[in-house]
Image (cartoon, rainbow, N blue to C red; front, top):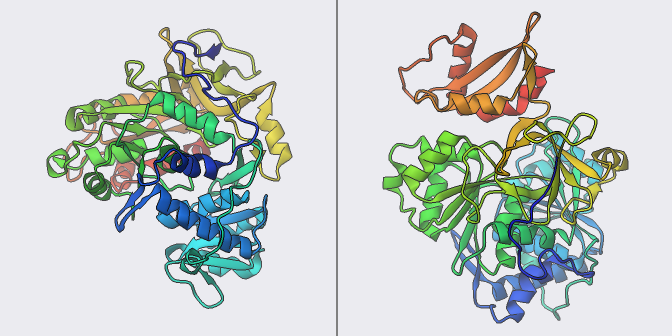
Length: 513
């Protein structure tokens, strides 16, 4: 079945992509031209930056990088935690028409080296807290210059020294909307890392979807708990927020429940973006809603993994604001989402955004019948879709077939038009000839009051194909137990009470194979 949402018409010019477009100009220079230069653009523990102050720093770094030989179209590594320096570096590079290469700042030397060997950046921008792995592999790869914030070592260039680079401000590079803008690398922990390439047009194509799903409000302060090396946090927390003329709040340090709640209270965050695991960990804190002032929150958003119905209802009951779920992949950040335009149906990821054509296909790439489960696919003609995998035309061609990009997730749609994600195709398995969706079983398990977290994996069985193995975590210091739990499962309960449930979900496909 093919779906093209047309229930509510958006504004004129929605998702209209101009021929020439530069991300830095769109998110930073245009608001200033509109007279919003004194509006706060970034807020963080040490202070804040207005749009004009941010632009001055971006211009200085852009001049400094230009003098270091950075060229249009050149890949440049960014390995930083969320920080003003990350935002400045990213916008300076896109202003120059260079290509920021984003990697998880916590990757170890071996994983980082694999990516550096593939992307071949000559220059790397990093922070002292994340520089060690880069320094360890520098002599083995193409990196000849390291620009380090917060403590450059001998032979490196201090990021702070470039902030003092004076000279005439130059206009943003006249880039085409289809020019390469940035590359997001997967971690590579479960296979060869992929460099996912996005064009400058991504900002409008996906930014408009963000603006339509959740219209910004005057005074909004947006925060995500994920690192900006992940496209969801990069978009929602930084680039979409600036483009929407609102403020981006930066979470410093680890995304612990306590740190997140303290930051919401300190910066008066109005819109939060995170993953279901984080929300469950917050809800596991006794009486957190009485210890932290969360009244500034007008809504929260969950993506990246299935949000359980019990998590949704408990959040609404204890925090009082809406918790919207949305679905996307690194190749296309926002496909389907909940928002204020439609009633929330817990367990669903909502409805497709206007103009986004999606389909549910079977194993032969044919549309399934209404109500049936199949593979979710996105139109290959959508301007928000990635350009391809960096230096990997074969993988790109395999991903884009018959006019569709298959996301790899199983899904179905109900009679009211709401989409439900059953899980990754390689996560699902058969038992007694029945196709089992781990997500649905996990959802049912977490309705039990004694279950805090659950992960379902297959246990091979010669007679029925697979047994359904449920691994659960109980409340801390709880004496409760689940009837019928096997000895093997009990040992895993102890394992998962340490907060490692998400790891099993990411690895269960390996168990299935």
